[in-house]
Amino acid sequence: MQDLLRTFLRNRKAAIGLTIVLAYVLIALVAPLIAPFDPIARVGRPHQAPSAEHWLGTTRMGRDVFSQLIWGTRTSLMVGIVAGLIVTAIGTFIGITAAYFGGLVDDVLNFFTNVVLVLPQLPLLLVLAAFLGQVGPWAIALIIGLTSWAWGARVTRAQAMSLKTRDFIQAAAMIGEPTWRMILVEMLPNLLSIIGFNFIGSVIFTIITEATLEFLGLGSPLALSWGTMLYNAQTASAIMVGAWWEVLAPCGAIVLIGIGLSLMNFGVDEIANPRMRTLGNVAKALRIEKRLLRQRMQEANQ
Amino acid sequence: MRFLLKRLGFYAVAFLVAATFNFMIPRMLPGNPADIMLANSGGMIAPEAREALMATFGFIDAPLHEQYISYLGSIFTWDFGLSIKFYPMPVTDVLMQALPWTLFLTGAALTISFSVGTLLGILAAWRRGQLTDAIASPTALALQSVPSVVVALCGLYFLSVRNRVFPTSYAFDPKLDPAFSWEFFSSVAYHGFLPVVTLSVVLVGGYLITMRNNMIGQLGEDYLAMAEAKGLSDARVRYAYAARNALLPSVTALALSFGALFGGSLITEVVFNYPGVGNLLYLGIVGRDFPLIQGQLLIMTLAMLLANLAVDLAYVFLDPRLKRA
Image (cartoon, rainbow over all chains, first blue to last red; front, side):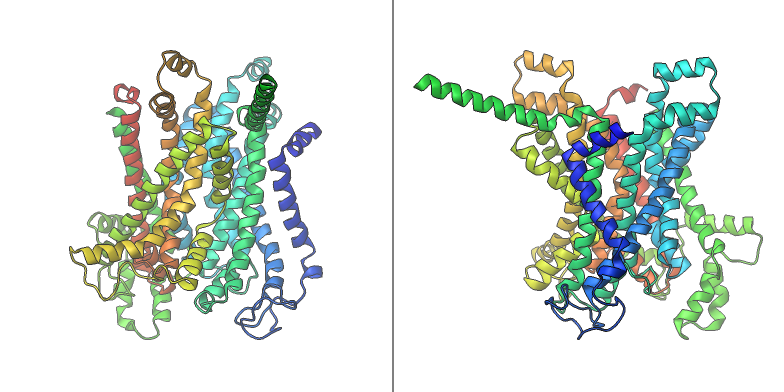
């Protein structure tokens, strides 16, 4: 486990990604301490441009954008993590069950997964949210979690299928290990990278989708999140009146956490798949070779 | 042939699942849409219309399975009831007016992003570690995690509001009448440019990364060494040998990306006020137009399934082994 962590941190992309994500987590944890203003109080004139007092300006309601952004980090991260956990749990369970038992179980689960994959997800989420009325962040996390597991189930299944044919798994089955042990002790640890990949990917997806749903006005307008900030900016026509800070601030926050998380995922991918890892080394080797060649040419010229 | 028949059967079942889901949503959730709509219409709908409204949703006075059968019947006769927001237009007509715009938007964006992404992915893998790879791959990675809302809003702000390079809404100049003329088509291109580019930018990263990874997977293969040993040109080995094989998983990934395509188009249409079905869904939700919402969901599902079918056909073409299977 420690080894795994060390390999992870030695990967430059993963380390940068982790730093970004940890910074967000820290901001979320200490939000009440570092937010300069009450995020829902009128603390300035409407649509004030960024200044020393209001770093990211104010909204049409005269609320401090920077404070809203900090508090929004809390909601968006929590929703992302909760939905990510649900997605990963369901996807891993279905994927491993299908691969391990095979046969009819696999046929049924795989069919089900494929059906969910070909349905248009965002419109479906919109319709669900529309019938539920304006819903809070937790309900959004739950809806996204329960509807987005199909992709994870599919990749986990594929990975588990190839794992099943490996010698040590065959041997363990031959010895007569019970099913739960086969799954939890023999297979699960070897699927950690795909599960981690799935989890991080799901967190990105959830953060983006939550913001999208809320932007479209399907979230509770009372919630404090990046999505509702976008929604409020949109209803206040912030873009049209030139109050760019109200729109670009939450956009920037979403983009940066997305980049952080996908850098982590790139790291996970490179660790799990050594062929991807050599890329940096190949480039380095090429550069060294070129330099040597140039040196030799110079020596020959002299 | 058997492969395609199997896929067709699968899509039929998938459509039935979506239709069933559509049938169940209003019945599972609290309240019923007719009452919600009556309450929201502010007197626009006469209380006497309640019965008719209930019937629109298949809430007829009958046991559940009969309701379901009559609902399925209405789908296969292409009858989704009347729209509330565009009363008294039938939902089918409202959707059919919007569908071409969405097909134009998604089709153009898909063509651009898939070809650009795949081509750059091939080059990045072929010259991995070099300049193309060093610039394209991290950019694609970053783009992949940028939501379409953000790209669309930034495009709108920087190119339509701040610098008035492109229009902020509509599919063509409202002063023009749709006609087969240069003026009309250029107006459509001018209004569609930013939405298409926005959507392409959102999608291109995923295709690039997928193709690059597939290509890298092919690089060490013997048949490539063989092709090179035969003295074939670099470009021929790259495109006719490596890329052709690497394209197969990329085409699978293409089918999986249709969800993102339609989702992205929905957002783009809303932000740019583009008159496609996505924008219609949004208007329907805001206006509590439930027949429109449900009809839209079915159309969207149908579009997804047809797109997947097209990918299956492409797959058979690219992988001749499937023809014999």
